[in-house]
Image (cartoon, rainbow, N blue to C red; front, top):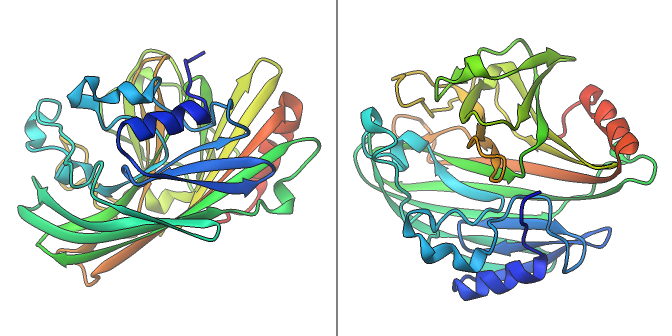
Length: 344
């Protein structure tokens, strides 16, 4: 088992790093921590000693010891897409030229709590590469609020909680197409399911698909987030529904995360693999770094705005529900979920 932060240690670590944070109660004695660093959500937590569901960097207050990875503190975060444009200077040397722009992460975002919701956002001035050039001026705002878990998902003695993230990106100046990118890191050792409309044509970003075990069943793509193979896969927007599920067993208990977003089939999605120019249309991504002591990521993006599109803004609406209980009860929720309509 990974060494995890508790809610109390996490709040202390964020304070040491100089970030602002707000706590939201989301029902069923659960809470989340929202911070202005990368517009992140941590948790959910059930008390100060609970490590939370979403992956968090162990000893988060020491994150600045290695400045190359000081951004990697965990949490359910909002960035700007596409990756190949804002985080890589030269796609032909992808790994050698990866970087994170401080205007995006941690950013200079303001954070405001109003009632039981938190809004984070502000101005971004970022450099574009590969797909466009020059400085891009944007503003982004994301609002995090409790999510009422629908009764059809509830069963037995299962505990549950949830939150929504509504984000809007506005283009102010520049020639680049841009989008909203939501990344949810998870502790490895579980199984990811992506809800499908049809059999997917998966984009293999790191050319490791041959070493992975992907099963297709009940209109779901099933993929273990474990092992020692690093991978990133993209799913086309026209072949998925907008629902992703992460199931993980912990001894006799289990946890379940259900993530829905406003996927637009065959919409204007612009991220591309480093080696495949023009290969786009992907709205869901799955990443695992090949280290059982680290993390995987479940990602989704909005449609593009700016550049050659006719839109100057775009939105991404994500709702995430969490379930905790005995393995048999969680499997019951999982079986219901596979056959329910999506709630994005």
